[in-house]
Image (cartoon, rainbow, N blue to C red):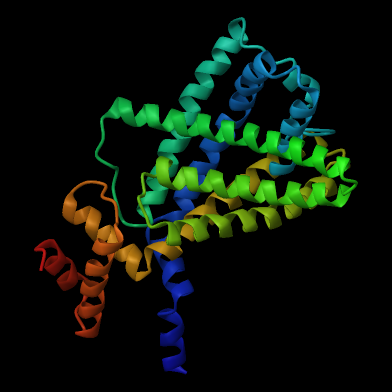
Length: 320
């Protein structure tokens, strides 16, 4: 029985879970959730103000963007949601309200990316990346803008594919394409956050599957959050607060998932090799295939010889 327990404790899921807990994953996820919630509404206000000024005349694209956001975040847009379509389409950055909203998204979006970066890098036991403060903040803002652009591009693809499916008489194909596009969008957003938000230069064979798993988990969470919202929206006592509460719960699970997915990567041999590489170089280094092989050989040699982590770290730090 003891050997079975020991084997389970050394298993990949157990090691990933303990890494998540040791690095204060739940606390970091809470901070990420709060910052994401605070930036969400200001971001939508400013984004739709710009969108309506530039592409608002395209009704199909506008509806596709609204539908994409509504399906991505249950309870945000629609009947009994936190926002209605008319509020979004009438957004304007002209006037004091627009100025305050633009300032709010500038502060909260940057803060969300910064908190997320701390969480992402903590899973690898890494501190903040060495970088110029202002360049780092500009990069964070670029990541937030990139997420918005991904939503618009994916919505445009959805409009074109739906029109093509209708023209060919394949209405069912439009739904399939819509699901695939949403899955690719979620995967791309997670990759953008990992790579440019977290400044993690991990091999694609590790980071892409992790992002894809997150995207698939989001699908399940969206269904559960939608069911939860429908269950409470007709309750007169909860109808007024149902949407914000559901969004907070949904965001909380999302942030935990993206951190746990990274914890699974961090406890692998390659993940540990990446941590050693960054620590040895004193900067954010790229883990090339050749360097990964060298570090993996060191990791495996140390494990085979029974070396503990301290000895392994010292040997790698000396470059031997």
